[in-house]
Length: 287
Image 1 (spheres, rainbow, N blue to C red):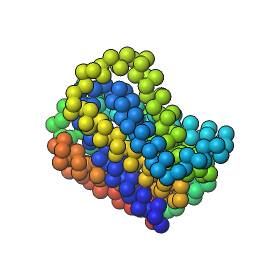
Image 2: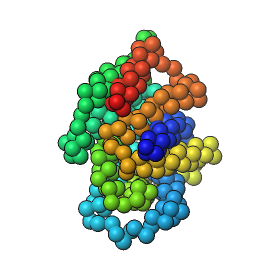
Image 3: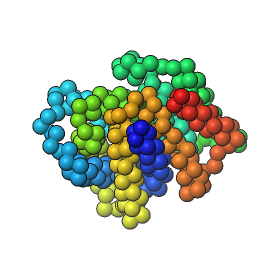
Image 4: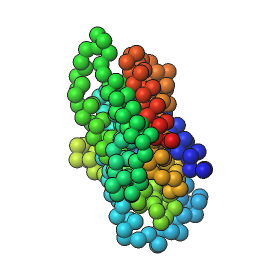
């Protein structure tokens, strides 16, 4: 049952990542911020590979495993780019619930592609997460629409879709190799994808103007992402995706707490009810 502890670790590190990244990219384009963070994640993940000695499995990776690791990397890259663009445009306590709602789609995909059955508690969980998410993203009374008010929602929804695909592809891709090695290989794909987009948009020209504060928080967010990934895919290797994913999504509670403490973002009464429903739905899935 050690995989449960790894899943909880993944939730904690993922939860603080959103807040650290939000601070780090206040004056940095979201695509460039994603690319810079990924450099840190890549270095961190390969360091763990060599510490654990799992690099010896490189020659044993089959074509099928490599294919799904690449697909997982591509979907991860797309999810990140959309997620951090949404964070750039919207509030953390609204973007995070939508991203975490990918649990619902992941469970459906796990049923279709991995043959993992859906239980009655999971059905209740899906309803709780769905209704709770809607309550959390509803505008507060008296709140006026901000610029890009619709854009952040679109990017957040796309992030959730790609995140669910990441879980399925990742589960298949690490079946026959060490989870640390799988994570490191996937990160290469994410890094290449992110930097290609940066150079296409010309955002690399803004690197010299990045402040020291932004560098610090982007690096910290990269480190916490690396820790979250390593815990998450270690949990996926031993545990069922339909349980690991809901535990990981408990990171929303960590994110909400940190966004309130550090970013001073507040929840309306309706959003608090929504958060309770999301947590209750997640808890139901673990039954």
